[in-house]
Image (cartoon, rainbow, N blue to C red):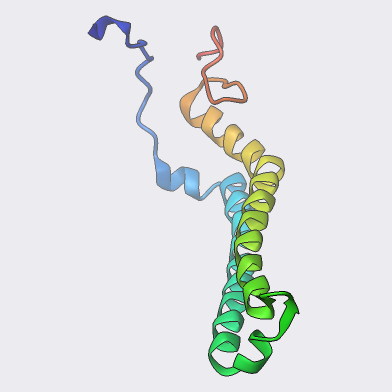
Length: 126
């Protein structure tokens, strides 16, 4: 049973403060923050606008659009749609802009190459 574990090479200790001070890590942080902070602010504004409309613009939110479907219901469902859209957008952004830099940093720290699933590629350990 316990013999199936893969053996990993013992690596030298990593000075993570030194890694954090590198230009590539700073670029990674900058790219991450330039997406996450504006998107979080935009989503929170959208969310609070919905809550405020529901509380103070009852007439507008109860405006019938089609049958029993009103503006409030549509905007509420759009909250879910926007959450999934932002998630998809972030995954796409991360795959294009963040993951390549993160993989370089990881390769440098661990001394191994990894495939697209994060598994070590054999024969590349230093």
